[in-house]
Length: 180
Image (cartoon, rainbow, N blue to C red; front, side, top):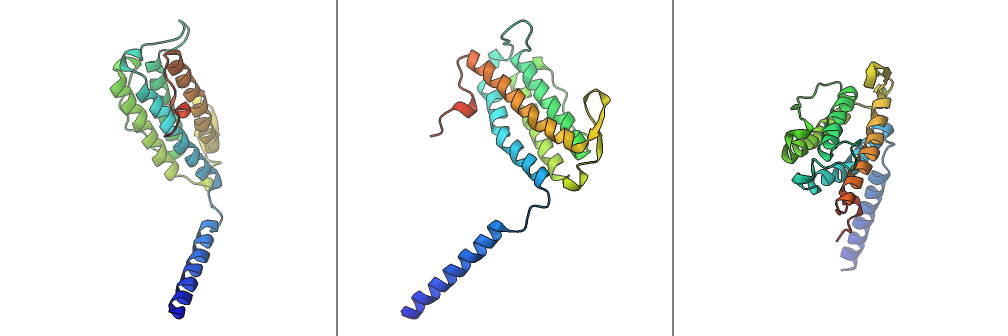
């Protein structure tokens, strides 16, 4: 019995050492790309969740005459994702053309598809390609990393706008909802 207990302790200790080594592991060979992927994965549920939370009849809502409708905001986010992730991954999206007047279902579907496109684009690149030249908004040339940074900055801006529209309609944005 003592032998069995000793054997279990040795095996479990060895498994713990292996697990710690795997966790520490080798340094990430693509820390920038990996960080961008993590950021996108953290923002995706908030951005999509906000689009799903807004009632369909509020997609035509805009706080002031100068601001865009909520539907236009969702269209803009999807198209921005497609554009930036095309620059990141180098592939043309097979997106369906959406308009802010297409309604909630089609706009949310396009938004989800744009996140899937971005995930594939990020999976197809690595830090060795960060200096590759891409075409940004307005036709200006920039390194690929600029498109990656713009993507993350856009999520902060776009989600803040979505959250404001939701709150103005007495809805709590996904990131502010208490987790059960």
